[in-house]
Length: 192
Image 1 (cartoon, rainbow, N blue to C red):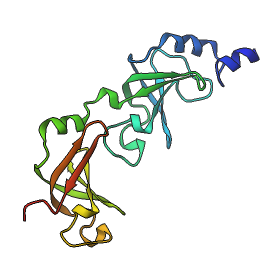
Image 2: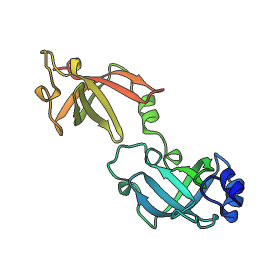
Image 3: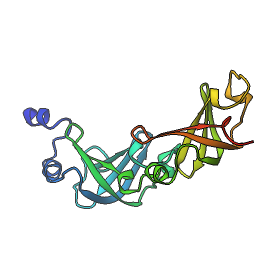
């Protein structure tokens, strides 16, 4: 029995292993949110057995919950909610199916990139200040960085010298990086 545990990680449930062998990446699986933890969400899969240790045989990591930024998983899902997710991989050590809820949703950055271009003027709200600049939300789920050098015509040492969180600003799109999903903006290049 110890040999089976070594091959199958920390979990040795025969029903669970039979189920895991039947699941393949790219499939869609549904279930109920069983527990929300700070590190992710457990899902009791409809066609899966109970997990001997965890609240469900499915698991969604925090980054795979949504394309948009959020502070807590409970902003995206709630216990008892039915979800349909894409299978990413089978975690043989923990005996769980790794899932993605965001893979079932359109990527707002891809849509933004299709409909916007460099040089375009946008309005947005400052969402966060960091030592090297400020993040500005220009669309729901889309934030771009205004680098410190692009915040003001005058030399500044901190973003607080030019903007504050919640402030509405006019910015110009200077770069749309699809591969890294990054948006660069400039406040000083925006018209008056």
